[in-house]
Image 1 (tube, rainbow, N blue to C red):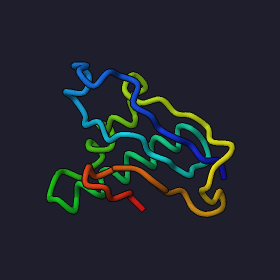
Image 2: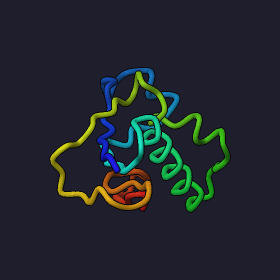
Image 3: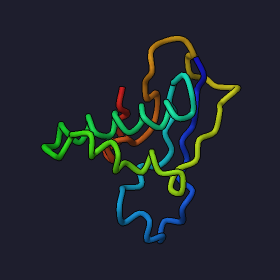
Length: 102
């Protein structure tokens, strides 16, 4: 399965970050680039649920990972990460505390 790196595109001072948190770079295993965005957004919502925040579908839709003005998606060809396995966040600061959404 392909591996993707989601990278922030907007400048840190951009007002676009007012609607969603900048979670830094994230490495995701998913079947497509759109799937990678969704996997990261779901992991972010799951981490928020651990901190008693809203975890419904609106949290996923509001995620910066789903906004192509905030995050770009790059295909990783040479990677230390295992390409075989289920859709998953493999690396990144998804919850803002150093915990990847595995």
